[in-house]
Length: 106
Image (cartoon, rainbow, N blue to C red; front, side):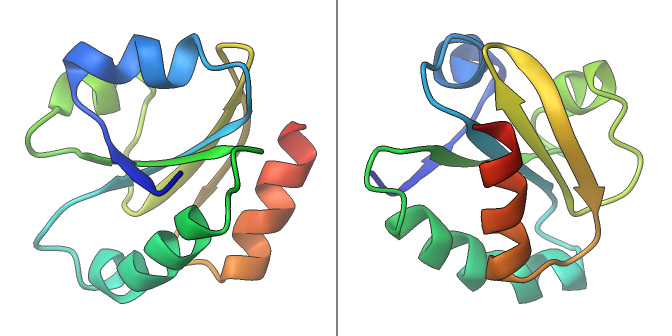
């Protein structure tokens, strides 16, 4: 399925209305830990095989979405299932941790 880039306009469709769990990476271009974990997020997205979605949202461009979900630190990863937040972790994480978060969301 690959990585999906979110905006305020497609957030509802891609995340809240998704029929599979969604891992959302709230990030910013200027954030060193975000840049460090970026390739890991892309690799994880490429492993999804339709079982889950992996999305990124730039908090500088889509600040209202970040504010709505109370994202204070970046990167922050939130797993959504059936339109609801089910897991959250802040900071750069490993692919294994991403997988663990998504599994909890299933």
